[in-house]
Amino acid sequence: MATEKKVPMRMCIACRQMKPKKELLRIVKTEDGVIIDESGKKNGRGAYICDSSDCALKLKKQKILNKVFSCEVDATVYDAIGEKLSGKKQ
Image (cartoon, rainbow, N blue to C red; front, side, top):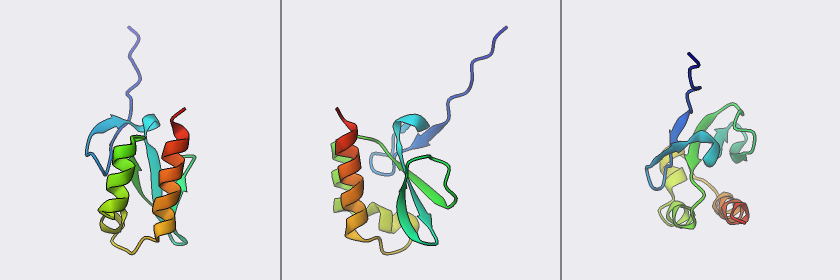
């Protein structure tokens, strides 16, 4: 009786849909500021966003990261996330 490994699910902060963790981009608030977490293992408060362009636009337009992390997030972070997500789709 082989048991299937449980797939970790996370919620996209823009569209609020539950998706497998591997499909999402992790953004972390560290002591140095808000950064994109390539490895998915950095210390700090994490938030996830799916790779749809709609979610990237909503994230920037509504400044969702400011609300999630309760701090002022620089516009360059939003731009970097937008570039990362548009670069992911190939």
